Amino acid sequence: MNDEIAFLAATALAIARALPVTLLLALAGALGASLLAALLVAAHQTRALRPLARAWIFVFRGTPLLLQMAMVYYGLGALDAVRHGPLWPLLREPLVCAWLALACCCSAYIAEVLRAALAAVPRGQIEAALACGMNRRTRLIRVIVPQLVRLALPAYGNELVMLVKSTSLASTITVVDVTGVAQLVIAHSYRTIEVFCLAAAVYLALTAALTAALRLIERRLAQGALP
Amino acid sequence: MTEPLRARGIIKRFGPREVLRGVDLDAQAGDVITILGGSGSGKSTFLRCCNLLELPDAGTISIAGTPAPLSHAGGAPRVTDQRALGALRARTAMVFQNFNLWSHMRVIDNVIAAPVHVHGTPRAAAIERAHALLAKVGMAGFADHWPRQLSGGQQQRVAIARALATDPALMLFDEPTSALDPERVREVLDLMRALAEEGRTMLVVTHEMAFAREVSTRVVHLRDGVIESSGPPAQMFGADATAAFRAFLAH
Image (tube, rainbow over all chains, first blue to last red; front, side):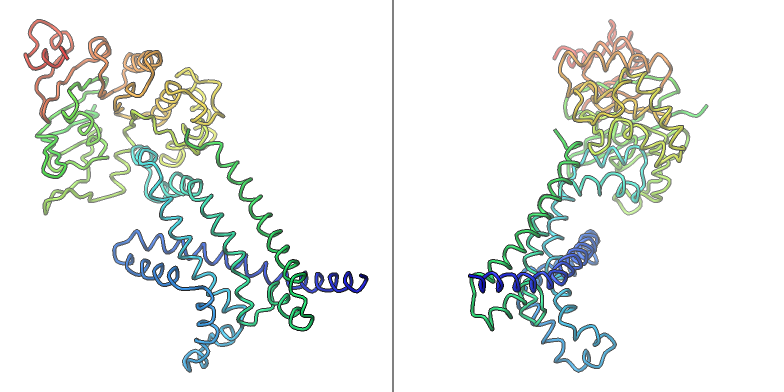
């Protein structure tokens, strides 16, 4: 019994030590994916760049993130141009590769969320901005983006929750995150259930915190929601 | 004093359908022009051409003496200068059928948005004026409310305060009472009547015959995209009204 408690405590500690990696990957991934998604939506608005945005979304939404991570980590390293290129010190880091794949993949989903929200901004809200003489930039900042954020938030939050859980795939390319540590512990203890349960609890806590934060923001924005 | 509005030969097509077939209309300062007509007569479309929410396929528009930056070279209408278009629209204001208050802004922010973000009025001055305007439209205590907390009539009165905030040369009203409950119509019409009396230049698309008869300086009957008849209300609603306008009124 004491052995059991000691083992669980040691495992919990090891997992807690890996938490910063998971957190970093999730935060940087969310940031990168959101910025990329905003660029994709902007590209989608211009005729010349629309095919590019469509192709990006087609590829990254249509293939598994697991494969994307493997292709970035193992695939890019196999290319001489990359291995001798200036970015090699970054691209040989598994964490960077995981981040890159995560951001690219999730950007495709978030771009679709933002695009749908943009299309859902009521025409009358934009016409009121046009009618009083607002220029493009002012319309965007004062009317379109605030409306879009409110419309996009529920679906965007969903994508962020998916993103947090998807960080666990980084363990497949040797990143020692929460899942990575769990697998290492299992590899020499053979105690699967307890360890995975501990790891799962960490993800639950993370997504619960995220969901609570999103709900708070949603409630604040809902004050001005359409009737 | 230049005319707030000068529209000449306005033609607008939606696909193969010609909605406006050559409309000329001038508004002098202080004019309250009511545009009447059946549904599909093009009255709302004409109003929306005046601030170029719709781009006319032919014809010219001038607001307060400034011609709209519009080119018809090569067929489709094209804005030649977005900045000039913005400046032109900034001299006008529009009151919409569905109010179109910005739902993410409180009442006060709706009213100061154009002065601050389009005209560059200092925020403090804009807020002070906004409070005065809200008092004028009978919405003094509602500055911190959200639009959705207000009734339709209240929203429309805020929308009118928003329109007044930039002291426009021309106010455009697009069926401002059509989305209101009958008991709310009066509060908006009374307010519009007050604006007319203080000499605002107004172009009003409406179905409110009493307003047209009692408040407007001129009534325009639009039918099938052309002005069928127009004149002072005494003439339009009097003995020598055209048969077509009489038929419209009989509906």
